[in-house]
Image (cartoon, one colour):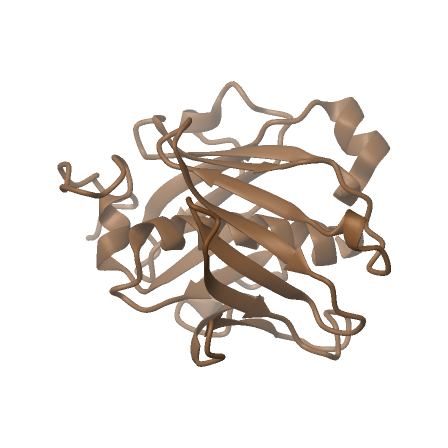
Length: 228
């Protein structure tokens, strides 16, 4: 019988501590609204998530660090910090989003995301691009150099049972996707709509894999939380 969680690997040169396991995977599942779990016992009232591999094993846990008033007053517009922990409760990724308005008509309101791993060490950024019809984002490395792009569907997110956001190279070659309502492996274990799946190349820079995890939370807050 497989363990329900992954034991962290020892350190790897050039890999942020805690991200070693990401070097071995090309798919992840993010399950929202999990029951209270021991690793997050101090965050009972906050949004919580499990991040699993395709075998259903818990790889990381995530918790939104916001007070109840901020969530109630600002809703999906709110700034947030999401702390991603390993199976021993050690924080390995920090995802931060500043408070922004949600108008697509004003470039000053475009969304931003900063990802750190380990906490205090920036590994990448996400910047929303202005477009009248398509959700579009640029993924940058720690030097703010563009590395990848993400593009959502023209139809939007309310008219499709499964919503895919394509991960593209800067030359517009598709190399993966972020999917709402995962349609891949373990579908039977993820039967409600509060799930994301990430597919990316196995050899993608592990820092960019961490940024993709953070990008899932931004997509959820921007496009899906109002529907929940």
